[in-house]
Every structure is written in structure tokens, then in C-alpha cells.
Amino acid sequence: MSARYRRRVGAVRPSHIMYTTGVGSLVDLPNFSVLVRGLDDWSYQGIPEWEPIAEPRLLAAVRSLLHPANVKELRPAPWLEGLDRDPGGPASRVGMPVVPFPSWLRCTVCGELAPIDSRVFGFENDNPRRPHDARFFHDSCPRKRTGRKPLAVAARFVLACAKGHLDDFPYAAFVHKGAECGKASHPKLRMDDRGGNLGANVEIRCVACGARRNMREVFGRWGAAKLPRCRGRHPHLNTYEGTCDRELKVLVVGASNQWFAQTLSALAVPRTDASELQARVEQYWDRLAQIGGRDVLLFARNNLAWMQDFAKWTDDELWAAIERHRASGEHAEPTAGTRGNPDLRTAEWEIFSSPRLPEVTDDFALRRDPDGVPAELKDYFADVIQAERLREVRASVGFTRLDAPDLEDPSLVTRAPLSRDLPTWVPASEVRGEGIFLRLPEQLLADWERRVEKSEVLAEHREAYARFRRNRYSDRISGPFDPMRHWPGARYIALHTLSHLLIRTIALECGYNSASLSERIYSGTGDDPRAGILIYTAVPDAEGTLGGLVSLAEPDQLVRLTRRALNEARHCSSDPLCAERLPQDPADFLHGAACHICLFVSETTCERGNRFLDRRFVVPIDDPALALYQDVP
Ligand SMILES: [Zn+2]
Ligand SMILES: [Zn+2]
Ligand SMILES: [Zn+2]
Ligand SMILES: [Zn+2]
Ligand SMILES: [Zn+2]
Image (cartoon, rainbow, N blue to C red; front, top):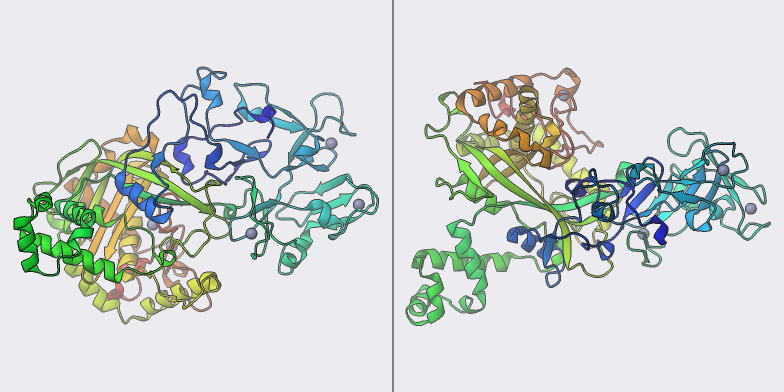
């Protein structure tokens, strides 16, 4: 864009960058909309002191997902406080760079429709104190009256494909049914927008030849056939990748499926002794791989100088770590494209489930009540930990359009790039907070799993999962498609449901906005059983509530909270509809007895988009045998 747009047009806090806004997303301003540009155009000039965000575990995960050799840093978004004090000062020149998009505008008075670069419309952004007043206007509007220049707004249709491409709607070609206008080389167009949803009431008209066509034609079943081929456009990078094989879809600006963030998140946890050993084994793997047996290891330890680095571990520990690493290498899948997301949860689970709490750091402080779990809750929880201090770092690795990224399998939905070249850094944000960690008794879960394993309800959940994946992804995978891949398991559904019950009760009891709470579910069966829930605050403005969430882990509070959460789980005001809900063929939603009234939480709170929830797996609803807890404490 030319220099006349190079001024702040709005304010988005950096913490919003991960979920609601980011590279490639459309931001609706009051008078037009803008697209956040790629990393190549981000600048840190004018920010006196900024530092990369240090979180080695997350950086390693980002590197393993993107291009290992390139990504070297996690960076906070360019941001400078002080805009309120000095609107024309340095802060006004710092921020995420944007470009107006869609680049077609419509005059709200006469309906003239033209691209921004046609110069039909002027731009004003005069008042630095009111960046939101920036606007386009139609100066030569034939229907202009005295007073303010007629406002021009974004023409609200865009095209997108499942590879993440985004393009302007080709209005001129559309109204002329793909042909040139018979009367003019640059015909004047009008958009007659009578409002309403979608395009039902919008007509495009060519003033020169009189052709007219209703936008209704491109919506619905046969609409795609009337659209051109995708040109592979990435307007955030200003690039065209050339004709792409995906079908284009018409979206209205503001549609929720035009952009989905793809992020990774890690808690800053100290390394456990075991993870330190494993990391060191990895570091020396070139040499350790040669050691084929225990006797060779003993010889090496006594004779090789570099073995000193393993002095603090016993022969048994070291040999076990070597074997573990060898096994993980053998089982590793050959192609990077089919790997799941990098594992960021194991290290966290190890810390939370360890009988010995780690040393307190600035980023991480845990506390366990010396009396242990309150007597009333002994059958419900095996451990309760107050996380007095937590730090969470989130990194953006890309985005998708039309379909949300698959949370387990990053290769399923094509990720659009953040920059023209391979990125050397990715945007990240860090937040500090506090939380409660609850571990459930392993025996309780193992017994329950045996009870529900053969149940019809679980079978329906599994089948819905397979349908869900077949419907969305089966055409995207070359080679064999395993519809049950990454199925989280019954245990996950029970833990996740319990987490939502507690979050909703915490919000009710303590006046927390539930959107300021987050969850992490640690679930696993077999050789590596896990059964933990972390509920935590991780929003920048939650500082005022410090201590509030942690105090809920005090015995009296926790008993009351659990009692209320489980009691309320037994009924929903939309029962019996809600209580009887199960995804049956052909439905492919991924929850059972769950709805907005009883279980759903905000999108930013839930780690799985309100999927994998079912009250009947936690408390008795229809068949008590399905319930993890038979009673309420
Ligand atoms: Zn006009
Ligand atoms: Zn025409
Ligand atoms: Zn495309
Ligand atoms: Zn419900
Ligand atoms: Zn959730």
C-alpha cells in the first residue's frame, strides 16, 4: 500500500494475537476491514527494548513442526504502551502491519463498487486520537448531499479455499458471466446490497452495459461451479502461488471459518531429573548408539572422558534411558508429514504427577497441602496441587481457512505460511497465571474403563469420531486412511467433562469470567497412565485475581466446589433432550449429553473446541454403570 495508509488504524493487544487475530486474519474495523500481513513486513524498529521470549521446550516443538534449521526465536508482537498518553507518539507507529482487505469497496450512498487502487475512493485517517475513525469515502458521489463525504465500506464477499488461499470476489467477471463487458474496458459497477444474511439480497450491476446478476447464484450447492479457479493468492504475503486444485468458496467478511489460528502452547516447567537425562542421551546419541550392551556401557563409563557428563546417574538409569531412546527411534514414523503434533504435555505431566514438588522458580511454583486430599474427596481425587505461579507461552505456527486445524494431526489441514520465505522466528505471547491441578485415582479410572469399554454409548462415540474424520479428511490423505487415528479415548472424555463442570462452577462461584480460564487435560492409558486436569488463568488482565483460583484448592472450598459441580452435572434444563443426546449415524458431532446450558465453555477456554464431552461418563444420568462417580461427595 502507498504511504498514505501507513498509520495506525486500530489497536489489538498482543495477547489477542494467538487466537482471534494473527497473520492472515481479517480484522473488522468500524468502517472497513484489514488483513494482518506476513512476518516479512513486521518491524521492531522504534521499540527500544524488546527481547525474544525464552521457552526452549516450545521453541524446540515449533522447530520440529516447521523448518528446524530456520526458526531461531519466539518473538512478542511489536507493541508499545503509551498510545493513550501520547497518541501521535512512538506507540502510534508500532504494531502489526495490515493491508485493507477485501480491496473492493462499495459506496454506502450510491452503491458504486470499485477496487481501492482504482482511486474512486479517498481515504482519511486524520485524528491520531481516534484511529478507529479511519475511513474511505466516495468524493465524487453523484448522490452526495452537503455535509460529510459518503462513506465507502468493504464489499463484503471474498473467496477462500482449503489450502488457505484468499482472494477478492471477481465482481466484473461475475456480472458479465466470465466474459468482457461489451461496452467499456473498465466498466463502472454497482452493488445493490439490501442487507440480510449471505448474498440473498445483493445484486451486482454493470452501469455500462446493463448486465446484472444476483450473488445468490454463487451460494448453495451449484455455486462453486460458477466461480473461477483458485489463483493461489496469499494477500497477506502479496503472492500468487499459481492455479490451485482446491474449490473456491464464497465467504462473507466476518465469517468465522475464514481464519483459524494454529498455535502451540507450553507451560514453563522445570526439567525433571529424568527429562534432563533423556535430553543428554539425545545430545550424545551419535556415540551412545554404538553401545550395544550393558557390559560395553560399563567399560565406556570407566574409560571414556565424555561419560563424565552422565556421572550423576546410575548404570541402571543410564542404560534404561539409552534403551528408551533406541526404542523411540525405531518406532518413529518415517515421514515427517504424518507425524502428530510435538508432545508438549509429557514434561508437564511428569512434574505435576511427581511425588516430589520441584524447586520454586519465578515461572513455576507448586504447593501441596500437607494433609493431602480432604477426606470427603479421597474417592474422587488422588492428589490436589495448588499452582501458585505458572507461565504459559503460546506460539503461532500458521493458520488455516475453511477448516480448523486438526488438533492432533497437523498434516490434515493445509497450513498457510506466515511469511514469504521460511520464517526465522514466529510470533509468541506469554502470560502468567495460577491454577489448580487435580489428579484422579488410577484404579478408579481403570475400573471405569473396563465398565464402559463394551458399552453401546462408547461405541457410538467412536463411530461418530470415525465419521467425523471420514467426512472431513478422507479425501485429503494419500495412502491408507485410519479413521480412528488420534482417538483420544473414553478416559479423555470423562476427564474433559469433569474439567468443564469444574470450570463452569468456578466461574459461577467466584465471578470469574469463564473465558479467562483455560484447561489442560493429561490423559493416557496402557503403559503410560495419566489422569490429570489443570485449570488455570492465563490472561494478561487476570493479575488482579491472583490467589483467587489457588484458594479454591483449599479443602473446604474444594469439597464445596466438587459437590456443586457434580450435582449440577446430573441435570440440564434442556433435559431430556440433552441427557439423551448421542451422535448417531449420520450425525458426526463429537459430544454426548452436553450442550451450551450444561457443559460448553468459551472457545478460548476449551482445548478441544467443546468436543469429547458427555455428562453420562461422569455422573449417573441414564445408566449408572457409565458414570465414573456413582455418588456426590
Ligand atoms: Zn457514492
Ligand atoms: Zn458491462
Ligand atoms: Zn487455493
Ligand atoms: Zn445440556
Ligand atoms: Zn474443553
